[in-house]
Structures are given as structure tokens and as C-alpha cells.
Length: 222
Image 1 (spheres, rainbow, N blue to C red):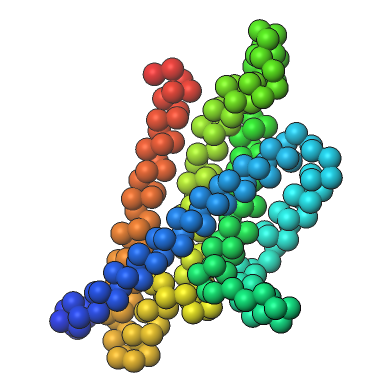
Image 2 (image 1 turned 90 degrees about the horizontal axis):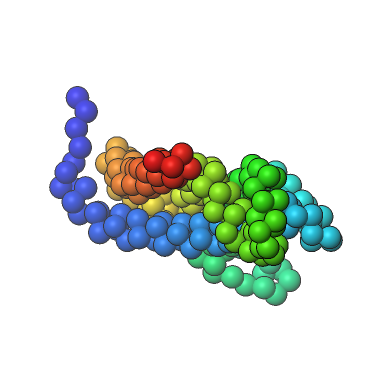
């Protein structure tokens, strides 16, 4: 019969609490930086900025077509060979940002290219310069259209943070594997792991759905 050792669960809750905070911290920083990087790359790609456009294309292809684990191993184990030593947390943030930036770039680019050319022309006809057109006309609409993809990418990056256990970042999966190895309480450890991710991911998913709903209402003028 399936049963859980609740006394054991209670005893290891502090470790899972600390690991949850680490997962939230590293995921939040990685998501914020990937959004900023993605926005910059999408602008360069959409407006075909010379030279930089080619660099962005190469970056997106490399980022999306190499596993995060390989990227992390390069940062954590490869860079010290040339004298650059980074701790696991820093490597994790860089890895999530490098991976997430390419996905965010594609999300923003799709939004930017969805804005009707007629609206841009109308904005220019009333005297707005290129920066003002982007700031007041293009970007707000592109952001609204990109919310579903951005939300999905945020969920993706939070789940991908579990890979950081491979470079000794003490996040949820690291603690889970550590406790299973020491105490052999596999069911209890996995139960806490699942519950922790649900606690993190369900609010993010709900917030994404709410923002998407609000953006649709605004776009339809309701």
C-alpha cells in the first residue's frame, strides 16, 4: 500500500525550502536577463541592423541547437582551462540567460512583425519619429502579442533550472538526489520535488493566463 513517511518529510522540509528559494532566485535572474537579451536581439533582427544581425542569427542557432547541459559544462569545466573560473550560480545564470535569450528573441520578433505596417505609417504621418513609433505604437502591441510565448518560455526556463544540479547548484533536483542517496527515501523525496515545482509553476502559469486574458481584452477594446 502506498504511504509516505510524514515525519521524515517534515524533517527535510527546511532543505527543500532553501532549495526552492535557490531555484526561484536563479530562475528569476535568468528570466529577467533573457527577456532583456531577447528584446535586444529581436530589435536587431527585425530592423536588420548591419553586422549585429548576423551575430544575432549565429547566437540564436547556437543557443537553440545545443543542449543546456553542454553549455553549462563549457562554462563550469571548460572556461577554467583558460583561466576563467566561475561558481555554479554564476554559470547557471549565464546558461539560462544564453538559452532563454534566443527563445525570448523569437517570441518578441514574432510580436514585432505582427504589427500592421499601416499603423506604423499612420504614426509617422502624424509626425512621430522612429523611436516614438517604436515606443508608443510598435512595442506595446508586440509585447501584448508576445505574452503567451514569453510565459511559456518562463515556465520552460524554470523547469530547465533542474539541469543546474549537474554543476553542483543546490537547487531542488540536487537536494532530491542528495537525500535519496543518503536516506533512500525515494518516494518522499520525489513527492516533495513535485510539490515544490507545482508551488512554483502553477502561479506562474496562472499569471501568464491572466496577462494574456487582459491583453486580449485591451486589444479588443473591452
